[in-house]
Image (cartoon, rainbow, N blue to C red):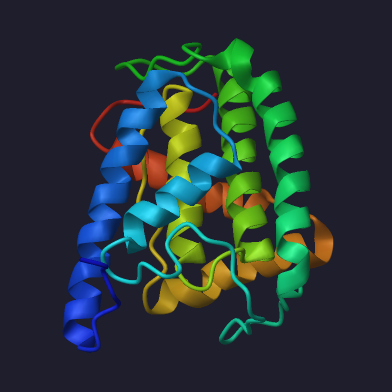
Length: 213
């Protein structure tokens, strides 16, 4: 029997919530496998979120134009999405090739980080911020781009020895989060978004003596 999007809003939200949990589990498993990370994997993350909630859009690039609420950013025309994702895929593979030497280089233990480890951490967080912004900028899917971006961020962090985080964008944090994306759009300045990600990492390791040199 073909699955369809539920008309009941409460049921839709319930299925999306379950899908997000399912996608989070997929990310944790995939991070440990060592298999390539590419835009196909990002589509799989999106499909895991929506396959029971909104199957028509699950893992499929959008075929309509979108406006982002409360944002000055205008996503590219839907006819350009596939090409932009193809370019994104090439850039992503190149960045991950550069990261391969860092796999397993970080061990979060009850000790201080050396200066060298801090630099490695900054590189990993930088790529995580970059992939996050690219997804939100291209906005390749009809819905769920933010969730997919946050899970993709975790995929990078967990692949290279860190932990997945929760990027808080509720209430007063939402404007700050939007501001970090605008800072990248306008000035190519990733530092505010990297700071949010670092805060999430430190929160996850809360209670473990850790100091970045």
